[in-house]
Length: 346
Image (tube, rainbow, N blue to C red; front, side, top):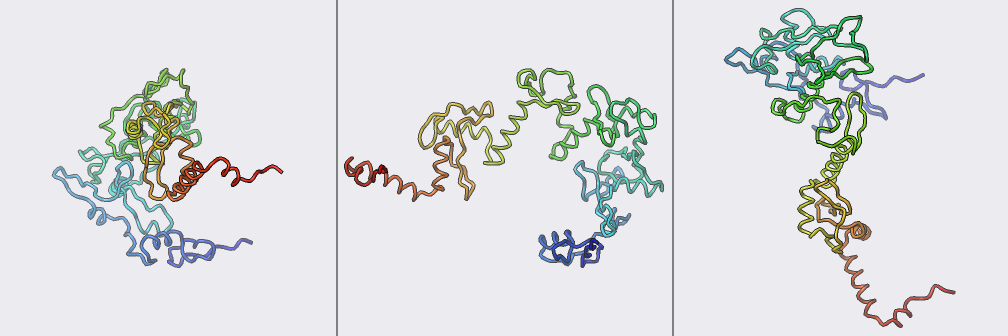
């Protein structure tokens, strides 16, 4: 019979970690960060008073949220009571305010927006409207033009983007949920700190012979990813840039500058590089040499020189002894070298 795990000593009802632990994982994370298990105080549950403490009023009457937001900039609040009860502690403030004052709980498929100048951060219930009541129209089956239960799917997403040939919704094959391509693109830009309005939207081009970077699919090839195609050349360039940045903190502009300073040759043996082409995002036969202890980049080497430095563990004393050894051996007469080198023949 399987034995039930012990509960955390904090009294929040969560199971303690295995291998003799007396606290839950959240407690151990808090201890690692703050050095103590004693919490400074749990967050109070969401209420009108807590909402008013996290907003600033404007002349237009908006209550602009000043607290935590999600990656799309929507107001969020961390409810301590919900966390203690084992529920999702994150509460969308705009939705919570609408439900409280309308006294009607929202269901899946219903979306709230605001008709004021601070559409994204305003939490005033008087400015909130039920933007779309998608209901079952928010879901549809793959390959089926009808929605669930014969209801026609909505022609727009929850943010008002038309589902047309330039904005084909992605349909999750498991849940049937439709995702707007433009909303997905805007969400990714906001997560990177970029205003979506500052970057023009490029429509989805399903029948194009070239990728958006101008690479011809017939030359470089592509991979099918659901409703879209991924250019092989774009994947190669992205991977080359990422590996160079992640491994050495460099860009191909830095590599071009280093090649110019080294006359396009290895820094130690002066072998000319013939395959390195930073303009085409290719390192070729050039290898980045860096200090493993401090992580500093020292230059570009050929493969043989880079391996040689690795074999001697970047030790200058070892290299000096090797130089002295070679210099001494070259100065000895041939007969003396033969006498010091015993024959392997028996």
